[in-house]
Image (tube, rainbow, N blue to C red; front, side, top):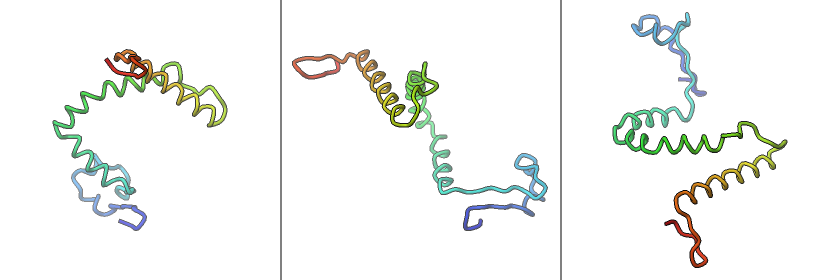
Length: 116
């Protein structure tokens, strides 16, 4: 492994029984390791845990639905420049959040907001 994170297997690939699955390059496989590769490997191990998968399956549909709400009719930004589009996106998110809270039972009682 080089100081810049370059990894070259070269001759090690020539006798490897898994070479056909790994690479078709004549000089063997080359990879670049980044600062986040260790964290990615740790997360992949965690993701195989049945307890993690149960929690993930529980919350994933709502996350996917929220992304769908944000992008419905808004695949392109309406303004030129970052400032106007940022304000539009934040306002859109606030509107969607308020709509969701109202469906969950948000009410105004005695001068304060409360979820039923």
